[in-house]
Image 1 (tube, helix red, strand yellow):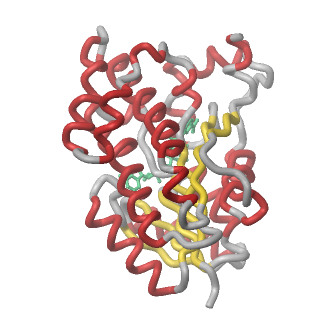
Image 2: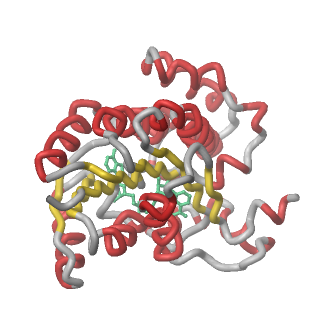
Length: 270
Ligand SMILES: NC(=O)c1ccc[n+]([C@@H]2O[C@H](COP(=O)([O-])OP(=O)(O)OC[C@H]3O[C@@H](n4cnc5c(N)ncnc54)[C@H](O)[C@@H]3O)[C@@H](O)[C@H]2O)c1
């Protein structure tokens, strides 16, 4: 039996780019919000000679995520999960952002842990946004509730956003906090994954040329690129290489860390 690799948001920019790399050596399962998008992604992969299964899944819904993992496990042992599904400030209100990016990551991580065995790896996708807001605003006490009460987590982690003056700032802070949480949570979970010989890492992309990346261009990311070391958007393939590496056996000693890949945006702030 072939090893199974799951990619969430597999019909999106980074997820599909990662699928092209991971798909050649694994039984691939891509999940996304709707079948139509998944069918288009599958057609692209098929034209490259990559076979994959598609699965409609809302990462914010724990039952939906359970079903994804149950189905994937029937195909073979799940060896890696690349979790790219997420939403950005322009797309939703603070609570929805926290639900999809925060609770979504909790759901994916919990299910991953259930199926994790020796050599398994989960790669969560965070964001450089987590490095660019005043961390004094980070509600780290709320983060801890992720382990015992996700409703309390959602409420408390969203709370600081409501003090921002405009809708876009509110969603912007919720996004930064949700991704700061993804990094924190991935680190906190490293030891329980380690007990199973499994790994968990996060990757923080800067501005990448995907549908989401272009949507956020007008809310400041284009401006930040002007000062960055590399003054351009990243190509989705440039983050996919890192995601695939982190998910592979080549990275077998890499766990409990975040990898920032932003073309030097954060470095320019030093
Ligand atoms: N593009 C960038 O510049 C950038 C920068 C920093 C971080 N990120 C992060 O990288 C990840 C991938 O972003 P992308 O640029 O490929 O975005 P994208 O919008 O192109 O793709 C994301 C995919 O996730 C899917 N998705 C959204 N909500 C979902 C849900 N609830 N359940 C299942 N699937 C869902 C979408 O349908 C989409 O296909 C996201 O987590 C994003 O926050 C992106």
